[in-house]
Amino acid sequence: MPMYYLETPAVLLDLDIAEKNLQTYQQLCTQNGKELWPMVKTHKSTAILQKQMAYGATGFLCGTIDECEMAAKAGAKKIMYAYPTANPQNLKRLAQLAANTELIVRVDSYEAAHLLNQAAGTADVTIAYSIIVDMQFHRFGVAPEKAVAFAQQLSDLKHITFFGISTHPGQVYGATTQEERTSIATLEVETMTQVAEELRAAGFSAVHVTSGSTPTFALTVTQPGIQIYHPGNYVYHDAIQIALGSATEADCSLSVLATIVSHPSEDIFICDAGAKCLGLDQGAHGSASVKGFGIVKGHPELTVYGLSEEVGKLKVDGATDLKIGDQIEIIPNHSCSSANLTSWLIGVRQNQVVERIAVDVRGNSTQK
Image: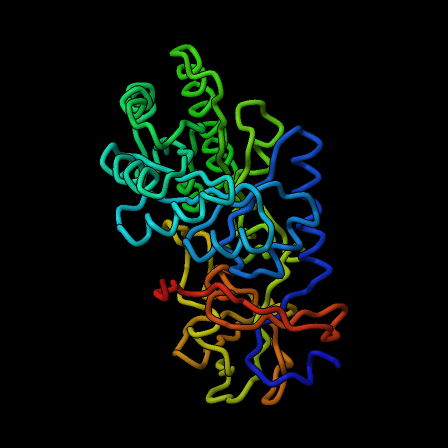
């Protein structure tokens, strides 16, 4: 069925582009002797995770425990939980998961590590941990110069074992020039390389270094300091990645199909996709490079300048042939948000609908 027969709004996934993205990033890792452990929170989909495994992903970074459990059920053997946790029920679920899979949990405080150790001991399992290093993003993490002392402090906890160090160069999403993006990528490699060397010198022989973001991936994957990479957005890309210079419009596999439903003035059109499809994200960590709320494919004269919950407002700058009843495709600013706002992606190839893909790990389960 042609995709233009779909009801709108619809969240489309161009499978040819998505599969090319998966292949490209996996090949870069393989060629450079790196492991690819993609971030699952981007897609929250068993089907897409299985595609990533088929292309060669050897592990996964998860943003929720639901995602961890889904990855385990799908056959993933190595699963990293991205954030510290201190909730007893969350810790119990992680300990249960560790009984049947290689689980690594990130930590940045003795208190959280102690709670993780208690949960592992109660469940009679061993859980690996990775120390979060703060590389000037200032979200989670210990300062680089304190990493060795922190690792030594955790050595008395008998039910958790040292895996390595992890970071996320999230400040790259605030970059406005290629020079800034390159500088952050250099900081990422240099920081993690230095901390790993200090840990090895202190007697920590097996130090796995994990890091990554889609904008810094291509700039760092050829460097020796990082062994495991965690890009997430690479499967979709979006307007923010275009603004950062880490993707082109041709690399963007996810878009929102919408219909023009109103033309209230000469330079304004209204479409039937709003904030509940596109999200209100204009840069998760302060990007000033994006314009409006998405890119309208094939219509450079249009700007998505405003969103209500169910409709979007389009501003015309110059001539346009747009009219009521026309359909448009909008590349969202942040595709991770758009994917999380729908239960189904409509898989297309050459503008033909070929499958529906469940976004089946949205939200956080309270069933356990």
